[in-house]
Length: 259
Image (cartoon, rainbow, N blue to C red; front, side):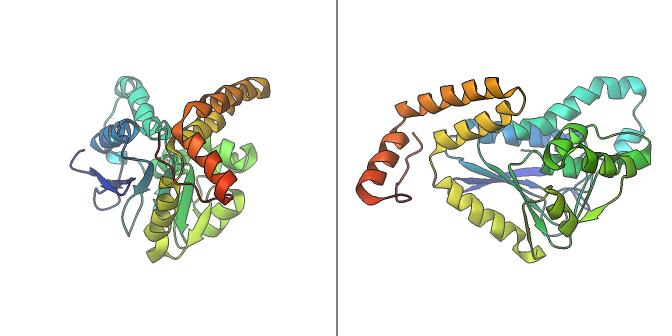
């Protein structure tokens, strides 16, 4: 992808590896690397599940404040949409995405993790949206995704104060799904990804679209979307395989081709 973002694929599972020492700060090059990696993950049929991974020590400790500090109001006005879309491109991957978080997920790091469908956190990781301490607000989706995950009151607490929270509190409020020891974060994410990679690809894509797009509108619109996606899956090979296997062998024993 770029010098600081790599894409590694193993058995249907892609790992988007952010590697910009010392803390994986999201400068422009990292942002564009994430966009390129997300686009490739979306396009490639051999990729069924995606893991976001910053390494053993830190996920992403935030945006590159030194880079932002040099920008004028005119510069950031031109750049803001690109900053947002680079992170949002990960949210738009039409496949299951798992964030494997060690160390710090702060500011842009927390915002990147929230683009994933699931977040696995090290027990000693720190989470937060500390932008208010810089005199700004989150600009990569934090004011929108955080309240959708934890509710508006908890989101306002974190965004208004800029305080860091530990993995236990992040799990308690619903920001984190699973907490494990730090040396087990990637292995836990990989085990989850391997299981999902064996599932029916098109049905998983439809489920993600129904949930994510349905949350953007009212219930009636969401129900219509679900009905449309549900009916469309009856044209897939995996639907035939899944139902035939259920009738002949019982639940949970189907082998899916992804077609």
